[in-house]
Amino acid sequence: MRFDASYFIDLCQKSGFKLSREGGLLVYSTGRKRVEGADFFIDAMRQHKAEIMPLLEDANAVKQLDLFDS
Image (cartoon, rainbow, N blue to C red; front, side, top):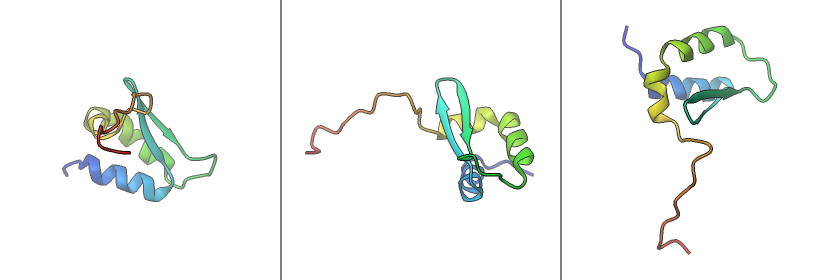
């Protein structure tokens, strides 16, 4: 079975996980809520980190503003 990182990120968000990237780290938060099946999500994040990381925006990155936004 092929791993689809974008689908996995959507599933995490629907299940109560907030995924983000901080530099080279993959960070998740549940907002202190208990998430059923959390071990499955955490194991999948560890195994497929290289595929998930490029799809996440760096939380600490400086946001570049569009010159035409006012």
